Length: 124
Image 1 (cartoon, rainbow, N blue to C red):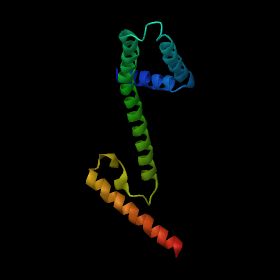
Image 2: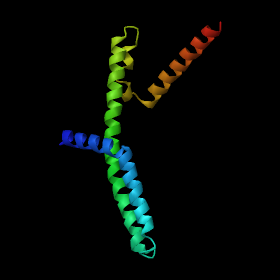
Image 3: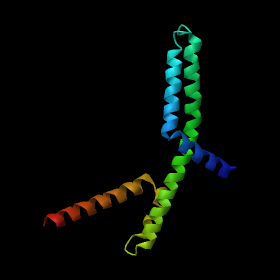
Image 4: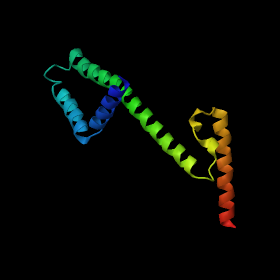
């Protein structure tokens, strides 16, 4: 089931990210707006666009989140492979997305210090 949803989410993300999808959505909004006078800008007329956009937004949140999670995981795995392949790299940085916030702040401070040292050496 997960594999089927992954394929579905990937295909939907590709489709709705295409220019034709944006054009179609824009056309629907314009058509809705043009029909306003026909329906006397009634509550039902307004409810149509509100309901439609709410449903689409609600469902797209899950599709986008799935796609983002997968993309993030792929990037992390690629970075882990690069860390593993470079002999000078610290192996403890592999799989660091599971570190605590404090551990991440400590690493960030270390990298800031490294950058400052490199900048000072470059100026000298």
